[in-house]
Image (tube, rainbow, N blue to C red; front, side):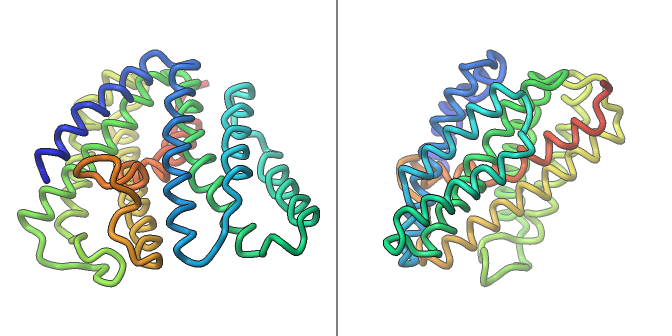
Length: 263
């Protein structure tokens, strides 16, 4: 199991780092692919809860979000209202064939997957965006890796037994410490305008967001009574299992950098 996890990481991680370096449509294309697979798995998971999310609508909504953020170089303020109104209109047109729960699940998928991942290219558009996006990926991976190994080696106390039995308090602190160390080592090289205190703050928020993202997906899987969101990634389950942390980390990093980076 550990060998396959390392193999997938060795193949997938360079692709994300290369896309972060190239930026522009290369990054947007990769984000679009990640969005497709994660959304597909999320809607499959939701379907186990006897809901019927509107797959074509969800996919088109996510594509729309990516296009708007790419052209606007920002998260448009009207985007939330636009998506909500569009889905309500669809509800009226196809009434009574569409249930309220189906509509809500569709909209949640767009926001949870599409909007969250759209923040990755937005980070790249910022000053020092290439370094910021690379650091985002590295901090997220180090947090997950640190939490995994410290939890296995030292984990005794399980603070969320019903939500995520495998997550331990030692894993939480292991991920946090590893993230802070990496931020202090590589942060000055990738985002030189941030001082050590700001880098520690960024690492701390990334660790909190990453572990919260993992717990949120664990909660969804518990409700659906499944272990993994998919099996396409050997040793990692599905795409959603692999990128659940990043779904919360991306918007957190974006707004942190928007606030603290010099204009």
